[in-house]
Length: 371
Image 1 (cartoon, rainbow, N blue to C red):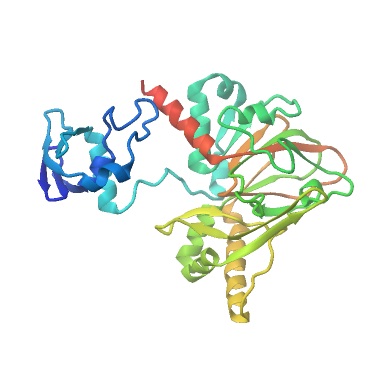
Image 2: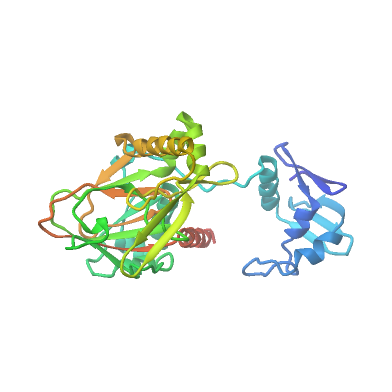
């Protein structure tokens, strides 16, 4: 940082590369990192914004020799902001948003280079664990090989990054052919690509599936990057995307012990129009409501998105073998399977977790690696 100038309620900044930025003094006072204002470990704010900001007034601003930004306030408080923090805040202010999470879209081509990792290394080495979680964060999924063939072992795998999300299916659930199954996942029928539990509020954001046995013909796993499908829809038919993002639909599931339903759009967008979640499950979706023209428009949009998802160019197809475990983002990566012969044994166990555990654990591992 080269220079800073206080102009009323705005600090004008000039950086070493010649670029310029501007930050409002209220944001700077609210973001003061000093030990009086922030907890030294958690970084949580120690003051109430309502009690401080109304009277906050900067009286001077300057850049130190180390490039940090220093402000003096009318109440004798002093703030010092690291150069990297100031640059990040100024860039976000200029763009009107903070940097998006690193996400790489993919299609069938990823089948030639799956994000594969080895259980022993991930379990014992922080760098290997970070690499595994980085793939989950960036691509939406990763495959672990060599996971012990022990029933319930999917739970301690989850413990490497977060907590199991218990549902009416239990902490750990089986996916295996059973007589009288109430869930199609427990039959030998093919499953179209879908997200799990769209009828639940909030929806589990991460799912794990551990293959314990696979002695059948067929039953290949099918994955689709839902974010990539949405971007294709945006380019080809933006009005369809607007319909799917703007019209919620009811998803529902019931059995002897549960009766669940939620109204949610098939595509969820953030304030900038970027996709953040999909809720798509043909088995549990209801039907749209409204006037006939609106219903027709919704089906046109929905079937258009499904056609993209079903296209071979977007599908990665591979076989889970015993000892393989897949972790995937349930609000991004749609999963399905091909049908298989009902003779022989095919058994998977799964559980749910949440995205924040993946991202938090990865951030801590990366922070530790930099020390």
